[in-house]
Image (cartoon, rainbow over all chains, first blue to last red):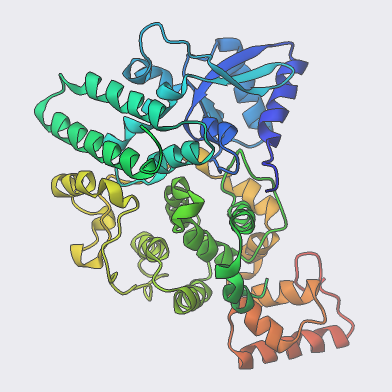
Length: 190
Length: 249
């Protein structure tokens, strides 16, 4: 398969290098999935799990203006619901997925990456992308039954105290995911 | 790209070839992406129809681009050629069967500009469409609470809740950048979005194109294609070159 063009990320790396800024981010979302699962396509935004420092934010905006991109192409919106899927004390710089001269991109643990795909299914079940991202991680052999079960278990542990409506939907989702795991790995040993 | 011919080979392409086609079509429409680079643009309506087809292929896992497509048609509808889009959409479905994402895009266009797209009345789907069928129960709960996307009637078959597919401006290149990259669209600003505008541009770039090839490429009937080829040939025979923007220089 033709290698994915990482032109935008590489150009931003060069831009940061010229400005003398080094930056490491832990990312989730489509960009993270694209970088760990070969052949996956992503939209044009990168979601950082942590608040982006002001000096980097300025350079993101400068770069965006020069390239006619929206300044939110590299954003930290996910940092607002960080606690939802990142466990206490968990290493979010777990896997290095892009190493440039000034920019390093990491993903959190695969369990966290999976949780970052599971929670949004409650809000946007009509969109296929979260399930498809999980399938991409399985197809790329980045995650297996063990990681998926751990993520679903963590999800179930966290939803116990939700209000009634949300609890019902969350249980429905957990049950769907467990059925999916059983179906996907039916020929594997437990 | 000869659209009719391309349709015949679509279901024989490998995953890698289909993804490459997606990259070209998404690039043509100016979807912002970390994973594609600008390539030679395809025909605009062909790109819309192909993206709709490809996002519907579950094995490609392109579901995240369905909201982008719907955002695109609602934001860039003024650049489209309705009759051509409709012909291409019908041809795709005739070749490859019912395409729910494509029909949803047609509904979105009609909802956005009911006058321009008044003929866009897709048939109801033969089976309910869920972008993610495994989450049907959760979708149904949302539908009960909020109703249907674009206020579509339940009988249309789209199991898509009203609040779905929130547009994000960062998903599309700005119109200026799109027009800079895409000559066909730029040309339409000057000459309107009609058969003649697209034909003149093609005949400028491919002077030897026959009426039959023009007809296949634009999904235009043979007679008008033949007339356009003859008119452009006459224009040239009088010694007038076609300018960079495809009109008289």
